[in-house]
Figure 1 (cartoon, rainbow, N blue to C red):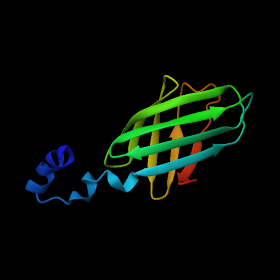
Figure 2 (spheres, one colour):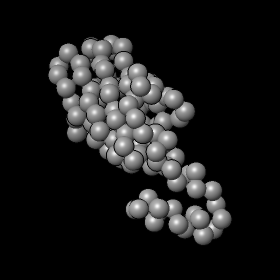
Figure 3 (cartoon, helix red, strand yellow):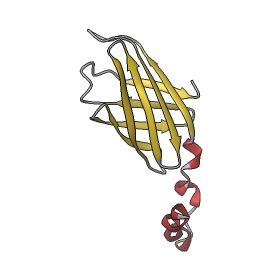
Length: 113
């Protein structure tokens, strides 16, 4: 219902509602990030439900939680173990960048893994 209320202004202007749909990103998204300089391999798993992003990043040091929100255009603002980051979803793929990550790696993954 809330999503519908947010999209009503687009409908009133005669704009397509496709840009208002969050559900095209729903599901599991996975990345296996190779080791970087002084960094272990990392497995990222994110589950998207509506506009919510939840998941984890696991490496040789343990597990960090991921949380955040995704907008209708496929851009998510996340927190990975307390460090802010951005994820861009397009088609069946995503790219994530977490500037606070000591490895400064680009993380690339896909739907379902």
